[in-house]
Image (cartoon, rainbow, N blue to C red; front, side, top):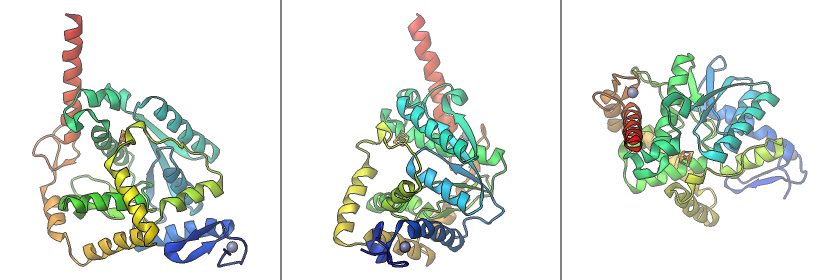
Length: 317
Ligand code: SF4
Ligand SMILES: [Zn+2]
Ligand SMILES: [Zn+2]
């Protein structure tokens, strides 16, 4: 297989695009395409202040590298979840990348902020029935928005790739979760109630493309997955979608793009309008919420703190 641009030996063959490229041309192609998606979906402009959620994994570090190469002003945000070895190693990777590339990184630690790590909190709340992903997702979303608001950032970016997006889309379609489907897309607009704009510049890249990019750029990242990811439904959906992609190259991309076109032509407009009209401000933290009084984040963490006190009192008796 030869590179379409120069005829040298290809480093990657992207069957869905009928495009094979050598290492050099692939390393140019990724930023060119990213810039195209940023403009196509009006994610942000060249003067925007961008907060980039960094997990230490390949996608977020690759995105940081690409945005940097494109000349955008970025600050990384690492959220310390307190998941033993995994959190320690992923924080090291994020810090190392920031230092080596002379980039700003803000670190927020959940246990310092709220008094418990994610695994501890998940044992003290009904949310997610003892599995940490529910409280973890809620906490990450809240903290990203809080740091972005307090720091006056224009947009929060995440490294979600096409495989992530399609797995979520597949799960939401199986359940006809119209509220979630209405919110899914390359951009989540900011709201008057104080939700900062969110963008996913890698949403059209296959995971193997971002993996190849980090490899060819020599970016070190944490290879291990979070230990709680094992057995997650989204991983099962990814496997199923990969099997279908094997038989029909391009299926994942076409599923996602057809969904975006359907949304553009008006599907889920009603749900989007309804969701926006329901947003109120949380009485405790001031962040937008669909609950009438206190947001899910504040309710969950208030509950965790109360149970911690009760547990301690029980232990000292
Ligand atoms: S897999 Fe790990 S990092 Fe991801 S949501 Fe679950 S607990 Fe959080
Ligand atoms: Zn080439
Ligand atoms: Zn709140």
